[in-house]
Length: 281
Image 1 (cartoon, rainbow, N blue to C red):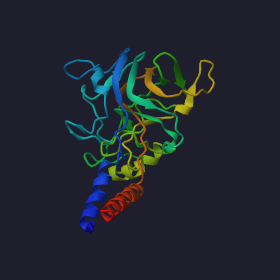
Image 2 (cartoon, rainbow, N blue to C red):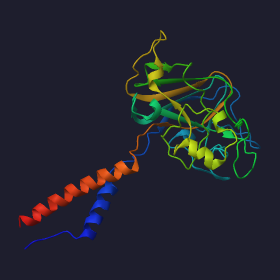
Image 3 (cartoon, one colour):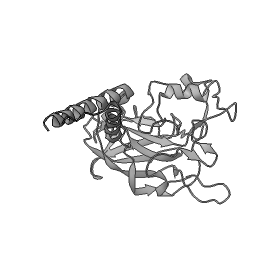
């Protein structure tokens, strides 16, 4: 007796295989805060005077929603439950869920992203329209230093001449993909006068944030060094003030067409094996 797989069952089999392929594994985020020093002039909540010092707020992925609607580049996170604040001299150390590497294959060479509380001023509120300078609010106008470590013992500073200030470009878009960087070649002026949808087009599916490349790591003598498998990231605020939402490792997700082709290939292999077993009976 011959057994055959009907077209409908073949389609279901393909869908089932696609469903279990871990193409879009969740981006690595912070699982703990081994050390936090708020520094001088950290943010406090209006009215209550309570500080933005809840270390739990920086764990996990960034926020997608606020009490005033979804997070967009015009409506960034702003509550104590969503952000941690670092004043002058402040420092935040997070441990990621896993290790990240200096991977040139990552989009634009970016290996991790820091999400803050900066936002574009909306001159057409609530529709979302940047002004002629793409002016921002909530960004850190001072200086920061970013350090990385594999073991929480030996730390390497990312070259300050290359590493951007934490809590600046690019404001978070909760509709985008966390762990996918914006093209760092895009400048603030490139976003001037754009609507929300136009900004999202420039983000190209990214959720924004400030990107960092582990290739910028320097040793104690200021020379480039291989930072290895990084698991710890530290942000120091030298001046100004930064509010941080999350720190996330960059993930690479195949193009939809490649995902489908790979899934169909696996489905075809499964179908051939199933057919071979049926003929052998």
